[in-house]
Amino acid sequence: MKLGVVILAAGKGTRMRSTLPKVLHPLAGRPLLGHVLDAAVALGAAQVCVVYGHGGAQVPAAFPQSQAVWVEQAERLGTGHAVLQAMPAMAAMDRVLVLYGDVPLIEPETLNRLVDDTAETRLGLLTMELTDPTGYGRIVRDKSNRVLRIVEQKDASTAERAITEVNTGIIVAERACLADWLGRVGNDNVQREYYLTDVIGLAVGDGVAVATCAPESPEEVAGVNDRAQLAQLERHYQHGLAEKLMRDGTSLADPTRIDVRGSLICDQDVFLDVNLICEGRVRIGANCRIGPNCFLKDCTLGVGVEVFANSIIDGATVAAGARIGPFARLRPETEIAEDCHIGNFVEVKKSHIAAGSKVNHLSYIGDAEIGARVNVGAGTITCNYDGAHKHLTQIGDGAFIGSNTALVAPVTVGTGATIGAGSVISRDAPAEKLTLTRARQATIEGWQRPVKSSS
Ligand code: UD1
Ligand code: CA
Image (cartoon, rainbow, N blue to C red; front, side):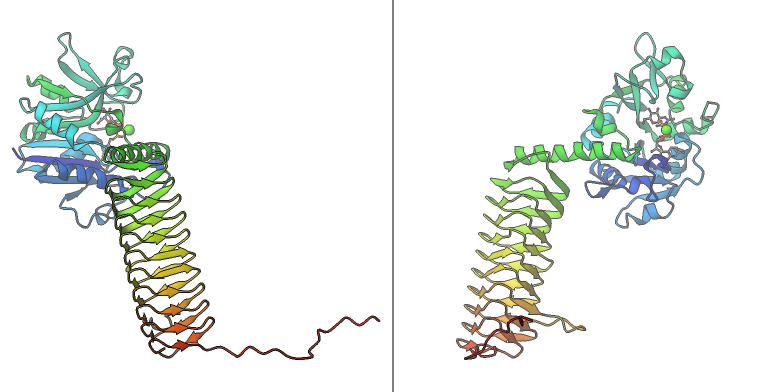
């Protein structure tokens, strides 16, 4: 059985009040439509077709890696008309599943269940019971509980409006039948639209039994129409991630105060304090502790790393036993080896720091290769940029860099070298020796402070 997926994404999204097309608004750091495309891929769809309109070429351009076929619906004439635009792209499919670009949290398991449970019939619907069904299409059934048709809220009678079983909009149908039914759908209704939902009545007219099944949770089929709904779904999604982390052996100080915008993998017994934000691919080794208010992006932390409050780790690798922060910033292409200490107000960019080295206070380390067991004193700066180019600073194993040293790159400090505090090192400093550039301290005998004249 070849399953095709059609994703409707042509809507305007007026209530978002945004210049960004609605389906490109992010949820957990990914566009809404990206979540739906992922669900289609997870289902193993043989063909995916996205019907876009509002926002134009911006929408397909946002998914350069996607294998989907993109079809523009120039005029928004209704959901039935939208699916019809996708039918040529579905020609080789056996069944077609219709999803929505602004319904991001649909679970592939639910869709699999819909597809499996309705395999015997030509048409399956995902429906649910709502205490307040306002705004949704209602499922009209006969006395034997067989689905007869769907009536839209705007077209419904008072009695029909009292029905609490609603259409989620998600349907699966045999491809050839769907094409035939869609060709017969008219627009004789209040909105003058070609409704996808009219397919149900046409199928029943052809003697087709319509099967239904329900989602696990209402959030799965909740649409995003405005920013408040988007924020609600974001919270729901983040809550689900937090629960999963805890089930898998991670402690969270507060499961409502973590946001993962990408993927976070934690080994066992990690502790995450409040207000952690993760972006991209973050991997945290066993027994790590992450302090409050940290930002981790595309980084890997080894076993037992401690990250203290208010630290930022972006595109860096930190090996086992290292201590980072508080208030540290590790920037891309940084590698911190085992047991290093990177302390407060220290920025490290594109540098390698070997095992056991310490940069504890108020330093900038950029484009540097620092050996093992090096001590970098407070206020040390690598002057890596001459206004045109970046240059390398190399520091050998066991070196000691006195406080407030400026290392003017390119420059090398030898193994075991000592640099006197306050030096400006612009030439290589030899191994095992003390090098310093400092005016000699003088004491002026007999000097007196000026005093105010008493006139
Ligand atoms: C639709 C269903 C309704 C169901 C509800 C669930 C129809 C006629 N009604 O109503 O039974 O309860 O969804 O949320 O299908 N779209 C296009 N092109 C169009 C029209 C719509 O791409 O020409 C897209 C929209 O961007 C949106 C989706 O289809 O993502 C649903 O359209 P919308 O107008 O919001 O349908 P509802 O009135 O909510
Ligand atoms: Ca609508």
